[in-house]
Length: 145
Image 1 (cartoon, helix red, strand yellow):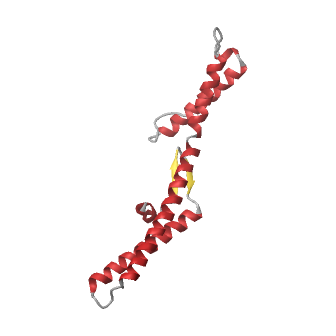
Image 2: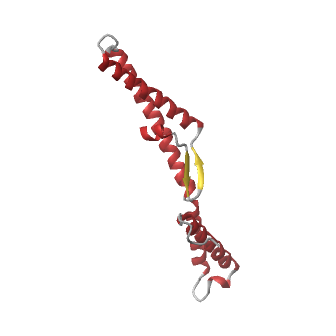
Image 3: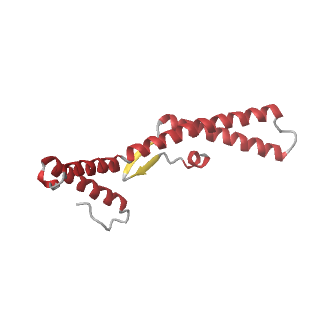
């Protein structure tokens, strides 16, 4: 979680589609960074000299602020990753739906292309599989046509 806030990479690419974290998630990441640097600065001052050390209460307050910032960013970040995952898997879910429609159209003794619904499902299924293939082929040695 801390690494995600440090990286400042708020664009996430899934299945060839760009997803962006919300402004709220970005703000939470920035607050986490500020509170982290406050902790680091306090520890640097602690090791430098006894004159500039924070009181125990001040240090505890900085730790509490960091903990709250961590929890806020973690909640927002993970929630958004879950939402991105759900949107990104729609291609697979659509392919599953097409396959189910093709199976229903293939009643005993009937081929999928015997019914318009089966043929449409098969055409959509093949397009989805081609799209998934082109997305999975990150070296671009395959085809999507």
